[in-house]
Image: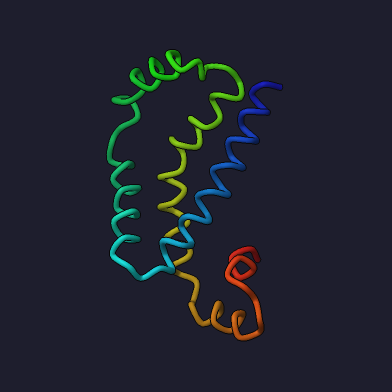
Length: 114
């Protein structure tokens, strides 16, 4: 049950936060959005084996090795990959679809959801 709890809430958090972040980063045309996206892509370059021991020590020092404490750590480790993949998907969706939804009266959040 513990593994199921951690997996479900970890995946739900990664999917929701990464999808929203990637959507905003892909549809915003500013230099800051590209800098933030590059920051997330750069996080993919660092192998997990290099940061595995320091993260375990930090989590132990902050008392995050319990069930609710480990879930945000999974979010932080899984979000860069998910943002990279969602960003590519959002860039492939034609912007005209979003413009037509906006003409029909849909807000930005409603355009993101379906």
